[in-house]
Length: 213
Image 1 (cartoon, rainbow, N blue to C red):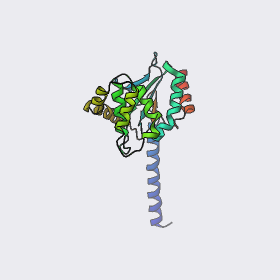
Image 2 (image 1 turned 120 degrees about the horizontal axis):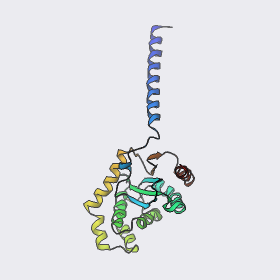
Image 3 (image 1 turned 135 degrees about the vertical axis):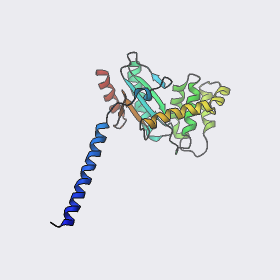
């Protein structure tokens, strides 16, 4: 075996060993609990709250995200089935490349300030096909949803464009980034990232396992 070949093989072995170390390190982090105080804040929007606090599902979402819309029916079925046996938390993670992601999040937050976050959350997903991925602002459409929900429109208009609402949405997104959320929807169950496809069946299996512990 030539000296050059020995050197080449030695370098390849060293590189392979380094790659294996990286893989092992990454795998050791997989499934590790994240910081609970960052995952759920005191002002995070809870669609249900379990009295025993045992099982918590957190979803980082973008109302304009097609994958979030695909997960939405299963999420609603899960929520209907488990009700207040689980705590279900929604957090904003608008994707900058989606033209109306921030407008939609601001509309949801403005509705939340009148006690109708869940109703606006459902309006936005139920109608995403009509307003999503439009280059023009859909703020007027969202105001129409606010009217349908009997919100105080003067207050809604003030809130939806306020610095406070914008900061609230950015704060959720910043927490997502701190938790290494890279896309939507991203789910966490009991402070651990849920890495399977977010189908109803997969989420149900994870929730059942949590409740059984």
